[in-house]
Image (tube, rainbow over all chains, first blue to last red; front, side, top):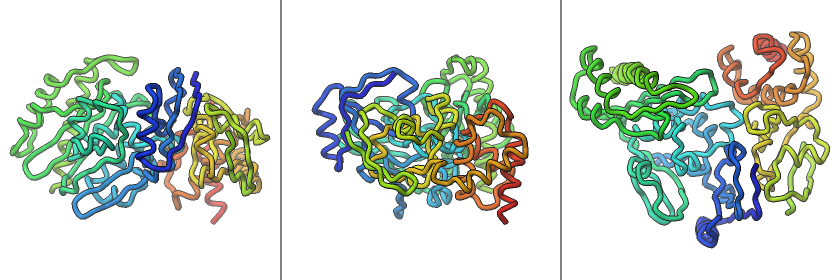
Length: 267
Length: 150
């Protein structure tokens, strides 16, 4: 059950922040699609849909995605299809149905740091920053660990166009369900970035595996060793979709597939 | 609070509460093709077009729709009837509860993908659940409808 006492749709980001800071119980509404899955009383709902934050912009060295861009926008974006082997588009394509993807926003998913998120895992394997109205730009890696330390509004995310190759993999019980586990690998020069999400906790980088793979030529032996490292270093948990042992086993399969794909892209 | 909508090409003004959802607003005002199934954004029965894009009206707050254009099946009756015939011919219109949402998604598919493959059709229709008939007959009906248009 959801109840909302007051609803405001500010026209500027400054105005939105002012409203947010004016009340302890003021809440930002992103896509709003997940509100009904819980029970919540909102004294003041702040709708960001009038702020023109539904953009995907390409610059010389970066791509900016506005907080109100939807997963549908990501999936269809011609800009994003050109980079990272379309990993971002592929990371959202199996989320529920096309209608929900036309509503769910990037900003809400990133700001909420949802554990089940697919796109967060993919973004974490790229050079991604979040841009917050008050705190400015911080790395997604730091944001996922620390969150926002004050009432703030996510304006956009910024991804470096650094020529990275990327591969996103996930496993689901059925199409459209939440992922049991997702994993994303990117490679730039001799360095890999590997992110694991839906563990079921929020996405994290696999630091030891990244360290091991640095500068290595990828072959069967190296992949096998990397799989052993990742299953040991990542903390997996159990929920209704799978237990931690299954996730642990799955991490090796997804890593092998993603690494192989990234290497193939390079060749 | 008042909201201004353009529904099926007609300007409308509705009085809604802050926590009212678009599916309820539409149904209250006579757009009864908009069905409420799961009421949590999972089944697709409430699918309408919002500025031309398919969305789930059961999880969209009515106030967010202020100033936007909504299309329900009442606004596309001729096309809907045509698609409906293909669904009936393939035996995939049994209880009929999901049909309006399904048809709105088929119309959106038609707009988004030219000559879709079987896989693309199944993937696109993933957000519309049908508990009577399954999806094989639905796939046949959609293919025949798209083929019939050529």
